[in-house]
Every structure is written in C-alpha cells, then in structure tokens.
Length: 107
Length: 116
Image 1 (cartoon, helix red, strand yellow):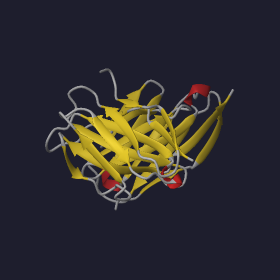
Image 2 (cartoon, helix red, strand yellow):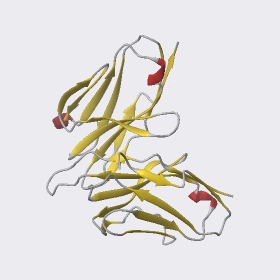
Image 3 (cartoon, one colour):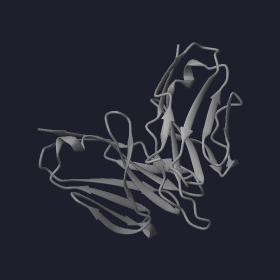
Image 4 (cartoon, chains in turn green, purple):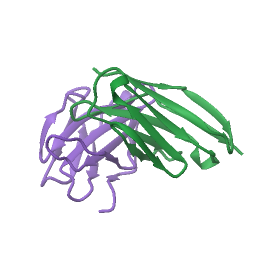
C-alpha cells in the first residue's frame, strides 16, 4: 500500500517562530489532507490540497503532486498551535495517515 | 447536524464483552468511514460505506469486528468478545462523495474504548 512519511516527528518552538512540516508519499494520490489533532483528540481539517497552494490565516500549504510531497507552513506560531499535525492521502476511498508531527509551542 | 457525532464518548468494558459504537454523519454525506487510533498502530482505516453498502471492509482486523449502516445515515461498529488490544480511539468520518472525485473527510470526536 501507499506509504506516508512525515518530518520532523517532533518540533519545539518559541511562540512567534515559523515552521515547516513535510509530508512525503510513495505513490500517486487522489487527494491530500492536513489535520491538526488537538489535545482532546479531535481531528480538525486544515487543508484539502491535492495540488497547488492554499492559505488560511497564519497557515498555508503546498502540494507538488508530481514530486509526491506536501508542505505545511505555520507562521507566527501560538501556544494554541500545539498538538499533532497529520498528513493523510487518499488512494481509492480510504485515507492513509502519516505518523504525525508533534508540535509544542512554548510561551 | 452541524458535524459528525459519535457515542459514547468513552467506554470501559471487560474482556470478552461485546460493545457497540455509534456514528452520526453530517447530514447529506453519502460516504462514511471508520478509523482506529492506537498507540502502537497510529491511525488506521477500518471500513468504508457508500450509502448502506460497504465496498471496502479490508481494514477490519478480525471477524470479531463488524459494521453496518442503515438508511444511508447512522452507522454502528460492533466489536464482539473484546480483547485488551482492542483498546483505542475509534474515529468516524463522513464525506460528500461525488462519483469520480474525492471529497474532504470530516471527523467526529471519537469513542475512547478501554478493555480491562
């Protein structure tokens, strides 16, 4: 099956810093989603981004489908950005998730 | 409804007992998915429904796991003779499936299952 790799596995930032999270996938995909899992376990949709670039406030994402990677940019990080960020791809109907990046933003 | 809802939020059961987990998808969403999140396995796909049929149930880990969906809406995931390794968070998602394209999957808050 398709493989999804995320890096880095852990990231610690000071409030106000910028960061880039990476997602590599092993095969062509129909779709790619980025999620933020909050401390209560809820998966919150950030982006549906099979290709191209999107921005939503301090967050933006870019997917280069031909090179099989996606990047999530977080600018001016806040403590509320802490949590696990997942990349997930669809091939067929199911989502296949990466292992996630655990982000900690310190005040 | 406004989002995907799941019940119960938490479930503690004894090994060997059966449990039922419920999912209410977003109104109008024809596709429904079950996933499981556990410490050792990460987030893994279990089963997918399109309407009331399940064209992909390949993620179900054993024949103790089954799921059904009625009326193209509510789904129930049943685990028979629970084992300790079934302890996990069970997540449900739904999407507005359009043939030939893929849609965003929206997740519920999950059911935290603990098997003692």
